[in-house]
Length: 450
Image 1 (cartoon, one colour):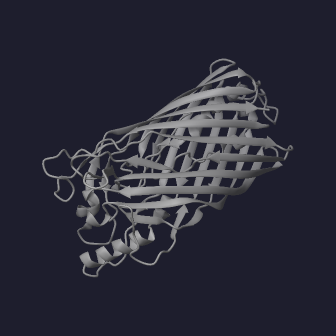
Image 2: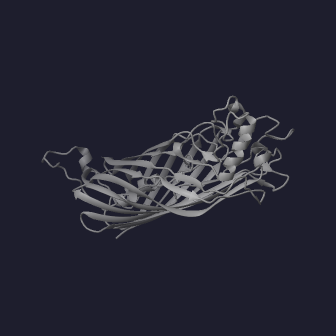
């Protein structure tokens, strides 16, 4: 059950705290270029932040994008965000008797699911040098479900009358302390508390008789990680730059595994080790013209080192492969893993129209995490286009909204054995083709300065 589609959702975020005329002279007393005359209200930057703060349809399990931008706001600040993602994902199963029943359509049906997620942030400027923030987000998630189809490829029409599905959820609380040793520069860091839970069901001919009916449930568990970073700002040209590292977080789950409701205990129970990935975010924005700001976000997520291999599932797959290969391969198969790290890039422009209105637009690219991809998340990266708008009823609060369209990359679906070092396994493991799929993400934000 590998990859899930997750979308980097656009919503335009916070502009500078107040309208101000930029100095006409730089610190050496010379005349400043046109960029030094930029006027920016709180409107523009709020929209930018919203567009960057959600990655609702990104590769693997990436969802929120783990944005640090609220902590970089000036003064005391609070925001809350709501995102919704509507994905349309379908494919065609290969014409093989072990994958689909004869004389039936090989269409998978739409496996995309509507999802919602939320983020919030509180930032306090304690003194001129110290600041404190609490960020809440839901960083990693997966939600896909195959509908019942007569071909029985990824659904069971005989016993459970269910389709293959996966549902993974997580939530974070980041506690951040910032220190400015000198003007415009800040270092920050702190602990991150994260909770994860999930379940998956394998149904249909694609999983062979041994795993048609397999269920696994990971009960909610919390663990600690950390983040650290540094930022630099030049208010006179509306420049903000930040680099943030988040550590991986280790879990030991006691997974509940069964086949059609009957407990699976092929070997002695043992905990399943899972690590949510480390990541790096680079954020940059700067004024480029009168009331206009350009912005960029780069993100790396270490999905290549991520895998899920429940104890009983691992033992049973190892036994089957040992027999099929005549002892040449005696290890198991990951229930979920990714072959490449994920890279994303977003570039955009925000513009202040009036004292109360601002707009922004951006273009995004996601590298994906490998192709073929898991049949649970069959996409190879994406391109996206987002637009957003913000309204400031008063100088100290705002409402922003945005929408982003994703062109999901075409991918081959595979069953998890594709990358095993076994001759001829690739042709057997490839099961389906997913093409011309898309998703739409929506975002809504409220912000308050105090």
